[in-house]
Image 1 (cartoon, rainbow, N blue to C red):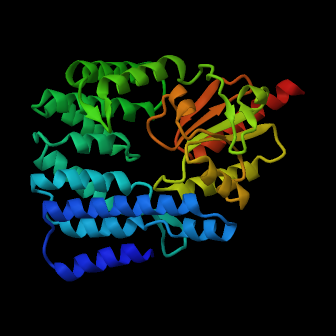
Image 2 (image 1 turned 90 degrees about the vertical axis):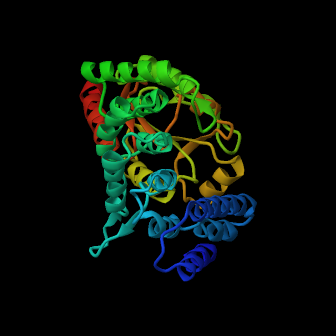
Image 3 (image 1 turned 180 degrees about the horizontal axis):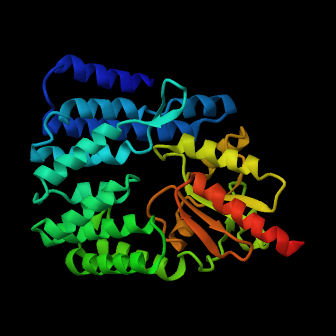
Length: 363
């Protein structure tokens, strides 16, 4: 465990072993975590040798420690409205956190705590005017129950702007369910409501109107069955790279960075996928927005073994209107989209199916 993480947790527990947190306590935890992450990011950028890079990578602040600290403060006070903002922060940083269970299998942690937050929002705060941060957190949640809660907020909350943000979140959640007609109609309905009722609301510095416009672009040009736009750029060594150079191959296109909460797991999954399909007509290609020197260091020690566009200014990510990271597209030999979503088993299943279809055609 990182020393800073230990000290933060210890100081909190010694100060108030049985008391709930105050809004100031919750804000302090969030700021301390943010500062720790910024310090870690700086350490990884300035690490010069492979040994320093490995050490810096291992010094990543332990988000589990900060999440436990936050839960110790708000877990017994979820009926109080002030906990909504720190609860939203908790929902955002915990989905990608895993720990080995007794059998040694990686298992998601904080699932019960996240469910307690959703239940409190639904039963006690559905009419709150402070739900926008919660809606943002639910929009990026991988839990299928988040969609139901967002739909309830967009229909029941008395504030039109909150309704609009919840509708936008619901549209994002529906994107993970596929591209059939009914789902598309619901997505479009929610996006229209978001634009009408909360167009000027800013989420992380971007208006809902702009975010909804990007989602409409995704529906039109980046849905299943569409031909994905070509990407042209450079890798971390400034060598030219393009999607079109892989014509005839199945492409697993991964948008990612090393600051993701579950970056280690994403890297492990992607490396395993690349190894599984080695020697077959398939290419794994990343689009990474870390500083180029950070990406180079990850590739130098073979932590990252696949080719990557270096995209520190997000120019390529913007072409694909990437909102939630990580994001994977699986493309066939003509760049037609067959899957868009998170890393995992569906990526491999889709790729295997495309390879099986292509083999008889080639024969």
